[in-house]
Length: 305
Picture: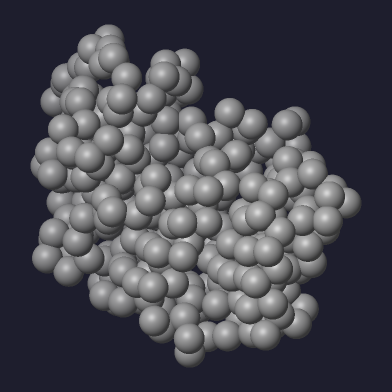
């Protein structure tokens, strides 16, 4: 009963996506929840539109401007610090919560006493659709080091505000370009306590070619190298280290930096000789295939590099 009467805050960072933003807001405010819901929209590096703002006894939409470091991490933190709820959720402006998402996650947190809940996703890309759901109820840190688990998308996150402020902490704003800030945040949350997972899709995640990170290969490479330095625990999980090294190898190859790509591909294969990212990186470095082609093929299968 306690979970049904609490205030839930949902932070939606946004940048130049007015139509999708409206859909994201409507999906959150339509969630089945006996208590109030507040949506905190944070405009980042774009002119704020006050049109979505509204207020009622149980559904409120507030509009703010990112007053921290420009980028996704700073925008999320602006929303977190302004949020008044007992629980805080994330939703990207191009994603959409499915009906029942909030209710299922609140029930899971109440039943387990957990602090951080995720759920499955429904990926849509270029006319294709895939459900991706983890067959797990609890996710410890070691599992996240081994596998990024794409299902654990930031638009699925729901957290107790008390744990967020006093244990997990804010989103890291120092990651180059804010890339992989969601993964770093997951790792830090799992350090705090195992994550709770709901075994059903709760969020529509739209992958599209206008993604801000689809072609920013230098940012991707820098951010992932930063991540490896920040989390020495990867050394204890060779398969996880190989996965990240393979991503770096691919990003270096996509920039035409064949020597760096070969270095990271060798490091990848040293940890896991069957890691496909190493072979994809070398194919790109050898100009056998374009990096954009690889990304499009993977996205059509509901996956990414």
